[in-house]
Length: 585
Ligand code: NAD
Image (cartoon, rainbow, N blue to C red):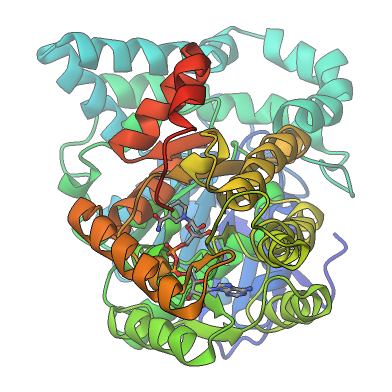
């Protein structure tokens, strides 16, 4: 194992010897990481390194895996009861006086559920973070519940999970899995992981993989059928649980965790836009969530009020940066992400309004909200902002390029300076944001999402908004191109196209080639009109969060924006006629 400063010891238990590795200061709270199938403790190396600065981190090879010895005979040597003995022996050795924080992935999590729900481990576990591995008892009850009351939806859920469990049936066949793993499958596994799961090499998986996988088949054979047939009735968690569900898991349906609150009185849910092997693909995010959860349990209180906003399971703890966050749609979007438990960076060229947004977000229960002042059209300023954000807050998970200005006036009334101003903010602002923060996301390699706020004007021509509409059409096309480019890196890109939204934009929008008095009159007129339309910025914010969750490409917001979107696709001539009508911004 290549972990810096790792200390190794061996723990004897029930006829096997377990290889246990420790990192970090033993005086700190202990976090025990349990690996899954087919794996060894090295699956955790990237997460462990990140946690070691805060905690006493312990990893061990499950019996029969990595550098731990295997039970003889294998059959019956991997029951959950024996795995519980092993876990308790490790805990007695590494943290005899203090309960530990347990973290499990895949079969490490399946085992973890056993430890977190059996009486003899009560008082030995301070918290449990579960990822990609359900309790076999809860799973058994989940199946039984659906068979007892089979609605079409519940049957579809059963069939869906049944199809995802194909490998479980395969592992129950005698001898064949062992032959495959010790032969061609074992050799090809690293490439398969890379292709399907985007897990890249770097010393992982280790050379013990074929024998880990062959021995580990007994995890399934010794437990799955027996537990699913007769799930324990008392499988209630005696510890707070943080459930992390990757939404792109090829092996487990997120529906498996429906109703989990019944079994877990103190449950925190998180979701991740990722596949199954998150300890390898999302170490930053996992380390941040584990640190936050463990710290809150150690403090004896939730660190912050639990987020109650929509999509809190998806955005809790994520870093979200919103430009133009000092007003209108940007401010509403910053608040919506704050309500969903995100850490928010509110950026605006107006320092005071950005500060107010961050302050209110903090009052809303998102203590980690910050304000930054920057003009999005200024390349060097944006470069400084990107460097500062990366150094002080981290790589953003969601970027919302929202800052924009309005400009109305016919083509011949629009001067080159007018063009430059509107393109600098509306288009170059988005380009700078995507280039700088998008690159950080791509280099981190853990996915993310970029939202560009365009406008219905992006696809709806108008004789009075040539510059504004052109800037927004460019943003729409940029978003589509970037979406194609970043698809392979799990970075989503969305263009939001609002119609008329009641925001202060009407009081700052400019009208080309008119004197100050006329400018004021026109502004008042459009403010009145937008006020009567009265579509709130909060609904655009809702649409933004929903679009990120769903990974939508283009989202028209407001009925008129949806209507003209349909016309643009199916009746462009009608839209061209509409373009000749004298419009408002
Ligand atoms: P708004 O005027 O209420 O807010 C815009 C915010 O962006 C302000 O706080 C402003 O200070 C900031 N900003 C402007 N230029 C900036 C720059 N160069 N750098 C940093 N910050 C800057 O406007 P809004 O209605 O909330 O608009 C937000 C976005 O939505 C814009 O891109 C706009 O084009 C788009 N949009 C608005 C409507 C609408 O009807 N309001 C419709 C479609 C699209």
